[in-house]
Structure formats: C-alpha cells, structure tokens
Length: 77
Image 1 (cartoon, rainbow, N blue to C red):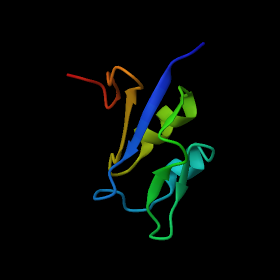
Image 2: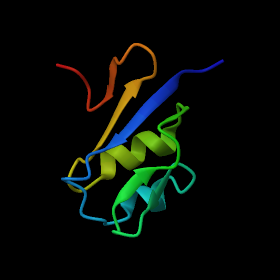
Image 3: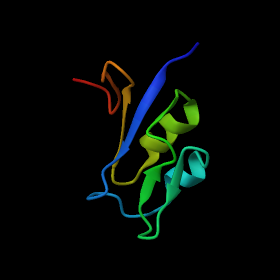
Image 4: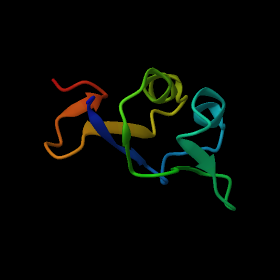
C-alpha cells in the first residue's frame, strides 16, 4: 500500500488559474468562487497531484504525508 497525502489549497493565495484541475482533474476542482479545492483532503499519493502542486503559478497547494504531517510539497528545509 502506498503513501496517503493530505492536500490543502490556500484560498487566500489561489487565483483560479485551474492549472491543478488540468493536471489532476480527479484531485482538484474549482468552486463557485473559481478557486481550487481538493476533491478530498486525503488522497493516495500520485504524480499528477505532485505536478499540479509544482505547476501552481502562485504556489497555493501544499501536500503533506497524511498522519505524520511531513512535508511533501513544498519540500521541507
């Protein structure tokens, strides 16, 4: 069984570019305010989710290991 990730979108930073939705449509959606939110806060680790976080133009997406809270993206210091 693989890792589980906790996904958060900082709604004070999100500009609604929808890059995350295009990268990982199963993991992100835009709400009525055209801001991103995770479909479910905890999801199986996946390359598409990581790419979505890496490609967010305003770095609004953070990913941590579910349970431990260890940073996945952005990487810890």
